[in-house]
Length: 237
Image (cartoon, rainbow, N blue to C red; front, side):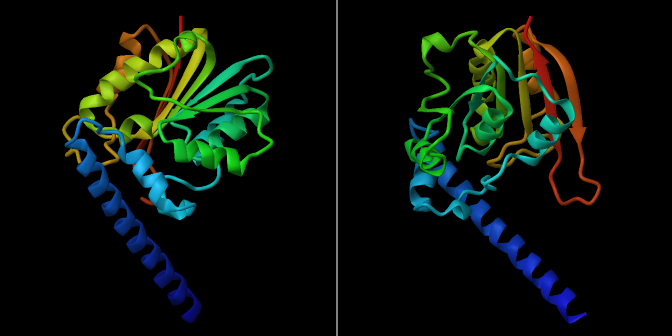
């Protein structure tokens, strides 16, 4: 009984710590939202972490579990195919794609995050680059057979969500695929963040850009330990 109580207290403290970190990140993001560089808070956060991954709320030092699950169950063809990871953070999702056999490029707005990736994976085949989603290299247009977007859009101010989707869509090669994993909400739900959960109507921007919605999953954790998520696979014509 004592061990169970200790375990419960440890979990409670972890919840408190996560809430405090989330509040700090939201405050930081809000500070930059009111400037002409609303996304500069990403670099500020990574730089202030001083090499401590626990200071980055979305970092688990392993592939996102909903992406890992998708890879395991779908087993996408990788040989000879190129992949791009949007807002790659510390690189775990990019690395698992490379391990699967994809030719992977991955970018992040934060120079500190990209330097961290290269330090973590010095022998990696992934092409890690510092880049801005709204100002990407012109030769990336229609270049990638598989594009992965996890949590980048929802971390941005809501007024940038549509523009972010419109910037991602042209990266997918004809016949290619785009996988989006994000927190989900209804249009009528209150909106606070970051993260700012997305709605199905917002995600329809990809269909309006000419994609076919091939898979659409509304993922609810029956134990309530993970927020609601959408996992959507789009195919380019």
